Amino acid sequence: MATNFQMTEDQQAIKAAFDKNGWPRMLNREYIELYMQRQWGTIQNEYGDRPDWPVRKVAGIWSVPFEVWEGFLSAYYTGQIYKGMKNVQYGEAEE
Image 1 (cartoon, one colour):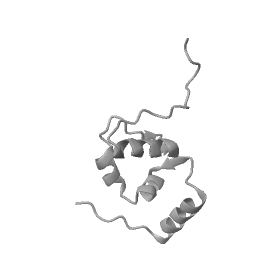
Image 2 (cartoon, one colour):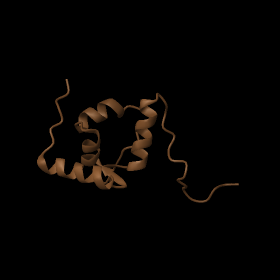
Image 3 (cartoon, one colour):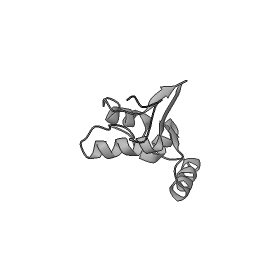
Image 4 (spheres, one colour):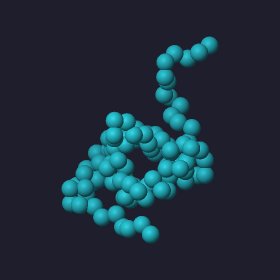
């Protein structure tokens, strides 16, 4: 059974600032925990086995763009597979 996510005073202040001013464009592991108000292990157990899990570990840091995280959660809660942001382009389009 998962334990309750307990926020420190610093975490509460950070979350309150993000809620008021907007979340950063890139979420790291700690910010994902604050956004979801769940521990990292619980988040990974719930979502991590999905083929569309968007969080990546690069140079030892778990991160995901905020817009991607919102899109992933929207797909998850509506029973769909997240297919990525439509406005992202990698290189030139092939003709």
